[in-house]
Image (tube, rainbow, N blue to C red; front, side, top):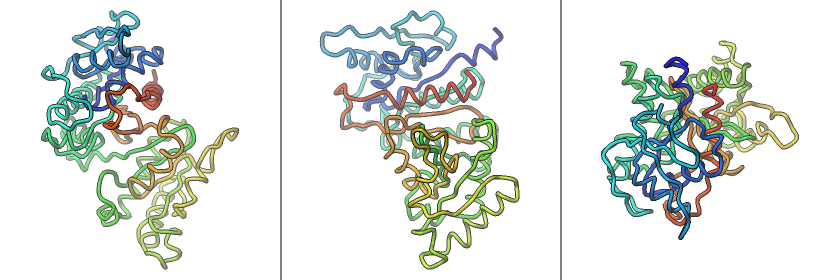
Length: 351
């Protein structure tokens, strides 16, 4: 096996915020889906992961051991029922569960940076990220509101390009629905102010290219309107007439199978793949802002949703939920969404 093919057998899973449920669900994933975790290792802090392993074992239980590795290839020497962890950054005294701290934010952010750079260098096939806490990340001095923007900056720096020259989009997906967001972590007012014909067209291009690779065919893409009833012919706003519909027309002229804008209160139902039906009317829906696209997917089941960053030069997925500080440290967190994210990353990376 040459170096390139060897790298394609390794997957980095970042620990997430040490004060949240990230480390716990990572350990649970190893317990519940060891086959899916084949070739995977944790990029994070050894002490944090040992505490999480003991938490999952429960009082008096026998925790799975944490094996500290020095490089991804060491995963091959780690025995079953053992969690491989690559220490990233300075060792951390595990923080209190459920509390925001700069130290936790720095540990989580450093793990993401390490995994992204490893993926960019081709040392790992993909990265899967456990949840960050945005306030902790900010307290640690990071100027990014979340994973997507941080990864975009890492990719741009690696390629020697400006951030705007590496456009990315967030896709939320489960077995029933895919949505892609035009804007991500900005206020609703800013999302509306930023809406542009060029931005919608760019989202359609990224979605078309990414889904064509995933599906092996041209995807059918629906575009949601911004306003109630998609503006009702201009009665409730002109964004559909002036910005969104022209972007759809531009995309169609490029050969993209896009249609809309459709009323946002019904288009997601039209795209949903119902049990017993092979597919919905559309393969994905373009949503104009964060909550418009995330609410439908999360309502269908936050435990199975996966976040995929489209437009990056490497595969990145994550669970469709946050750090859940309210239940962190109580042994209640479920790993279903993380396991789904690992499986999707493996599928996208061809492994």
